[in-house]
Amino acid sequence: MTSYGGYARTGYGTQGGEDGGGFMSASQQGSQGGERKSNKDDALRPVTIKQLVDCKESYKDAELSIDGVPVTHVTLVGQVRSVTPATINNTYRLDDGTGIVEIKQWIDAENPDKSPRFAPDTYLRVFGHLRTFNGKLSVNASRMRPIEDFNEVNYHLLEATYVHLSLTKGAAAGGGQQQGGDGDGMFVDSGYGAGDARAVQARLAPCSRNAQAIFKFLLNAAGDGQHISQVSSFTGLSNKDIMSAAEELLNEGLVYTTEDDETWAILEM
Image (cartoon, rainbow, N blue to C red; front, top):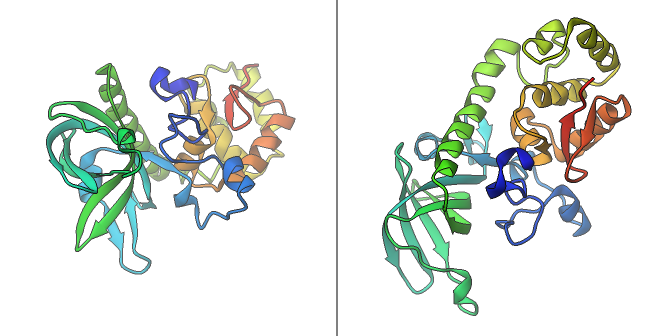
């Protein structure tokens, strides 16, 4: 995903490779014949530690949720305050200025070099899965790496805030990301002139509600393209629905693929 700069060009690991963090794209999952249980299994959510500390658990289905959206996979940043080593795992207390959370790094006995231990005061990016045990929340890290540029910390906090506002204030103001079709308001501050806006709106009119919701998200998103994982996080749509809706937008000449077939950007008029 080019919009996240060098540190996350792989779309937070959803496109595989060494930066994968253990997360697979929809095409990779499909090739293994597995079915996704729900969209929460696909979306990787950038979060602050305070959001994790405050996240709610639905006792009906035991799903952890942030801003009312079920979440399992998260990425966060922070500074190591302490490390507690053990035979099978290392436990880190990570602090991002909003709170402190425990990170469990499980050690591969056959490949211990794949689980390097990080010293206190090191800034880390963590990819992991939320877990609760006896009422205590922690993150099981699938991948951890040191942060080399502090701008990544600032960017992450801003991105987590952006996602939070999109899911809360955006839904309250616009009736939800999936409503779509909100007329001229979609094009406010978009950079389109009046004529271009009308032309785009005419092309968008026959598209499905899902396609309109995705177009709205792409129109307001910063950067050179948005990966399917981010589209899913913001719209709440499944990867299957996103791919189908994206095909509509491609056929209408409204978007184009960037670095791969699961990353899209608005096609300027």
